[in-house]
Length: 278
Figure 1 (cartoon, rainbow, N blue to C red):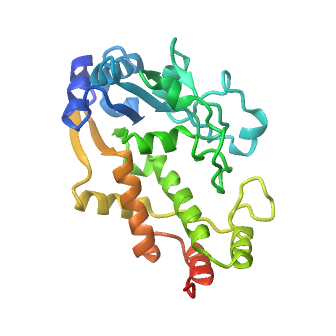
Figure 2 (cartoon, rainbow, N blue to C red):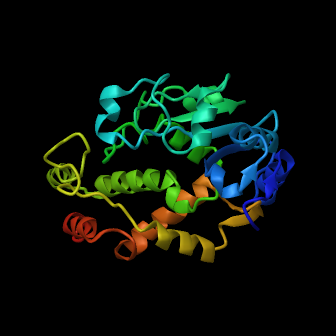
């Protein structure tokens, strides 16, 4: 299909449904507008299609992350003014009337629909998880935790699952789970002292450890397990998976074969602090 292909609203709605999105769903979209070829109406059409796909009882969510100037993200954060820099569609959606944005400097989302308020409120209210990007981006009160529990559908338009923010949610959950499994409190404290924390110069990556992993490996495994559903729209491939299925599957891989996808430094840390646990 060449770049003159014209994609219309109904084409995108159909693609959402073909890859597994239903009315009433919570729908998180990672997107590349240019991947379609040409969309009649541009980013606004893609957003409207997402809303039509889930209907009046559904909720549309887009990531509104701040990544390009991460060093200054916490210092300069303004929920209403800080732009999303993970795709043009996400920034258009953030600025549209009725969109609600969660209040967290690096991994916010914007949402509209039935559960938009519930998903975006209180991003940093409670339940911190220690982690490389900050302790509240994937907290228990975060939209990421809520979308996981509510079995949101995650759709990738023209991008692979390498761009899945839930991969970092899974990393945070694995670190939390691992630390909690260390029974000796002294040993646990030592283990925590070596976790990379972005705003601690002594442990900032690569000085600290963090389970950054090979998302190509997890995508291949998800494909083989039949958990990814795909369709085409214009020049773009739509890929869909449920958030909870993705996280649970990847966590199981972390537990069983960490050396196949997680960096060597973290695997050494894992063996050091959990290898002899009884």
